[in-house]
Amino acid sequence: MSYTPSICLIGLGGTVSAHHADSLELCNYQSGHYALADILAKLPALTELATIYPYQLSNVSSTAISLCHWFNLKHLLEQQLAQPHIKGAVITHGTNTLEETAYFLQLTLTTDKPVILTGSQRPFSALSSDADFNLINSVRVAIADSAQGKGVLVVANDKIYSANDVSKTHSYHLETFQARNGGPLGSIDADRQVRFWQQPVQQPLAKPEFRQLTAPDNSPFVPIIYSHAGADQQVIEALLTHTALDGLVIAGTGAGRCSPLEEAAIAKARANHIPVVMSSRTGAGVVLPIACYQTLGLITLEHLSPQQARIWLILELLLKAQSGSLTVSSNAASAD
Image 1 (cartoon, helix red, strand yellow):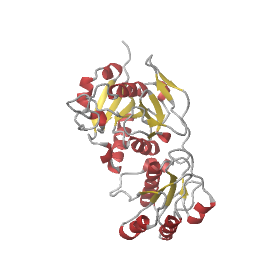
Image 2 (image 1 turned 30 degrees about the horizontal axis):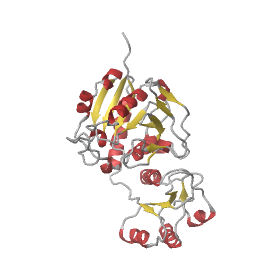
Image 3 (image 1 turned 45 degrees about the vertical axis):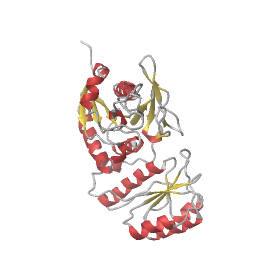
Image 4 (image 1 turned 180 degrees about the vertical axis):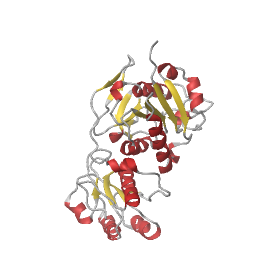
């Protein structure tokens, strides 16, 4: 009797669960129309690959995903992956914030089993939807021995990406997911085989303490400020004056720069002991701890995108709340 691996399939919603009566409609559709049970019934190839244990955690657009969803997902994954017969997990998710969920899990999960996130650019009901093959390929990766120990992965358009370095780069095209710093880790080829070309880069910003965090009563308030030509101090000063600001991420120009007026407002934030992370809006490259950042007391987080930097800072703030101290990376300025 042949061995059939087992995985858990967790549904969060998104375009992969979407429907429209017109199979050529790719813009106006209803997310969350199909539950996992519907998808499994319409796509029997999934259960031919593995024994699947489905869990419908939510069924929403990824624009509605919150810190609460992330901690609920982390708890469910660790509960399921602790079972010896479960080889890995696949998570269906809207593509708009999929990379953020992937990075949160990368920093917080305690497992070496494959955890795969996937979604689709076209609704499940569409002609030539990418949903079918993205789901099938994700299961193939989840049951592959070669995927063990590679951290959280994103599978889309026949490619495999690390959560450390993946982002959505196009609003509609199927090849939207890219890793601009390191490229894909591997692929699922025409012979149905999973092939890895490289190992994921070690994540120097990950901390074991992140894995012990529990869901907070309230999420820290950490907005992202997008710098631009002619930017002034008004947005940052309004946040300082009118909100309970816990932290701030700057999506700076180039290698992470902002206007003189913004710098003056950031100095006020630092004087109020608000941690500020400087990142880059470019989508690739590193932000280095140059002298002017150290003078301002800014945190720099190497290659992290603004949205990844926000997740990192939220976890740091939760450490402060839950353990009484806020630690920062070795290349970062003090965050008080």
